[in-house]
Amino acid sequence: MIKRKWNILFLLGLSFASVCQAGDDIDALYSRIAQKDIQALNELKALAKDNNAQALAELGFIYEYGVAVPIDMIQAIKYYEQACHVEEPYGCYNARYFYLHGLGVMQDDVLAKELADKTSKADTDTDAQTVTRLIADEIDTAKQAAESDITQRSRFIETLRQYASGGSAMAALITRLGYSKEDILHLAELWAQERDPELNFIVGSLYDSGFVEVDDKEARSLQWFRKAAELGQADAQNILGYFYLNGKRGIKRDLQKGVQWYELAAAQGNADALINLGEIYYSGTQVPLDYARAFEFFERAAKMGKFRALNYLAWMYTNGQFVDTDCRKAAELFAQGRTSFADDPHFQVTCEKDRQARAEAVAMREKNLPKLTFNRDRVFGASQGSGYACELEFVVKTDRISSIENLRVSLALKNKAGAMSQQVIAFEPFGLNTQNRNLQGYKSDTLRESTLQPVYQPEFCDVDSYSVTAVTGMVNGKEMDMLKAGVFL
Image (cartoon, rainbow, N blue to C red; front, top):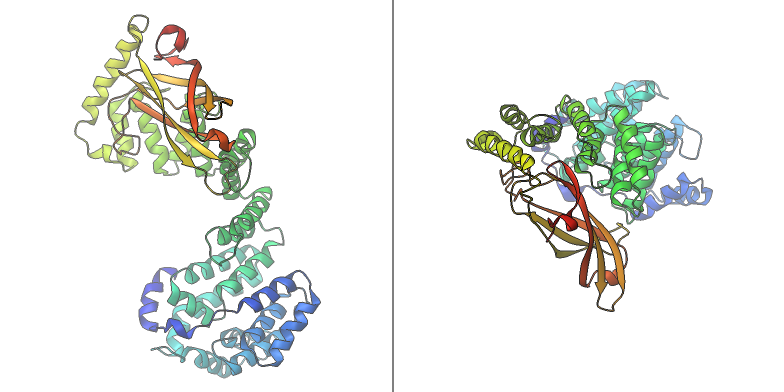
């Protein structure tokens, strides 16, 4: 099993330096061959004729899986065996697999063991039998399942991926057993081309995590995530929704497309997409605030055991958003969500006090309105591939407990050259309690809210001044023009 890998490392005592990774030139040749470049195939064969073990093993892979050539098990076995005899560990375990199971050749347990011994005795403190028992048999079983049932291919790739991601020693061992990280990625890409949604997602995640070093990993991962999403893979749909909603990976922000992708994933019961939709409707910064829909999405995700959803539900019970305030229920949900609120002996007392304060604020809202202060704070540089030049941080505070929702502040920004830019700043609900912690339980001023406003014109990252032209929102349940009402200072 995968969980045994750390014990396996102890047994093997691998010398990291002894394991050679496939050369960049051979990997480049493979990429060309995958695009049906016959010249590249001939170049690889020329290297193989010079007894280049990596080239021989790569040719074995190409003929075993039919990469731009017809599948030819006899050729694959020949190349794997030649690689094994030239330089361990290349090809030995690959060839062993065919002899052990009688695939393309007569079954030969003795030769299979000899091939295993040839690999595993090099630079290890254990014997071939131990290696075989602990890992190779598991990989063989997963491979056989993938060959007989294409729905098991993703499981096979994930088995290889988890081992290869277990540190340098484990990656070296998997290479020794015939699957370098490059091989794993190549096989996943090859199978993904058969319109397998899960494998397309796996390839995207392999690039995204830097499983294999490439210069354009973000572009490649986006390409595969998009393919997976279009084929209906829910995790990929959720990721694509995030990219559109936040302007990531060079994608221009598009609220409508972002929500559409989230909804497609949520319709399949994807818990992360449910939470993301809940947050959108809870915050009300990108769509009209809708606590009822937010509660529905959080509740569905909470039933799947998602801590973040449980904490949102707890926060809504704390603040009386869509549901009546229920401090005991909130405490129970925070405990299930594993936040520090669960250990706070003052939480329920403060919760009840805040409930009364909110009720009084609603009753006196015509006579006792809060005062809000507003200012620009810091400037943050844009993240790579975001599409904008910078982000301006704006902060708003209320002087007392109040329900501030759907807050929109219209600004006229002026840069040092005197040019003007109009911006509308949206804030999430705030001011509803005095717990002075956020819903994750970390210390936070609950009478204060901040937001980052993306700026697409570099000349407005250095703002000389700004003026507030309009402020709208709800105060204690009543929609109002806050400038006219004197709420906004």
